[in-house]
Image 1 (cartoon, rainbow, N blue to C red):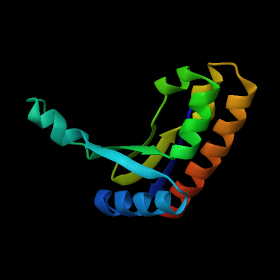
Image 2 (tube, rainbow, N blue to C red):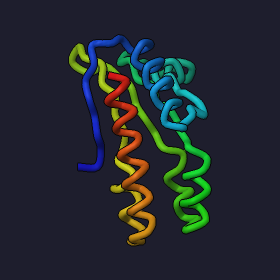
Image 3 (cartoon, rainbow, N blue to C red):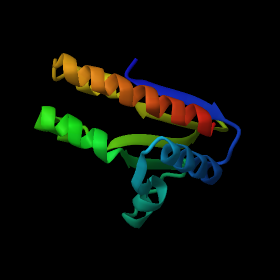
Image 4 (cartoon, rainbow, N blue to C red):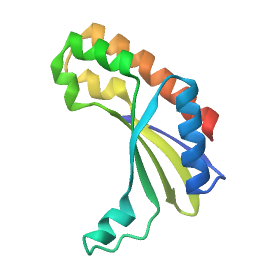
Length: 127
């Protein structure tokens, strides 16, 4: 599976705050946050499902993978999403191992595995 997703009883804002705090504890920062329904509404498109996209980064790990292969820049920063589906708030991410796997570089895949484990731990702590 290319993604990891958990459910939480928290509302969107509470879940986003919990994810941000948990990521910070794991040396990841949120570079920016996209409120997708609001942005689409600005463009005249109705989309009512609460959906946030967080662009997250650990600068040390970003430098490490970019020094290994600049094509990794196509996958950075990492994304964490928080959204509502069927009355539940969900928190998830595309797995870095799935993304890095396309480059067929064992060293990158090893780094991606560590990043993925950290992000999954942060998400689990936030739920």
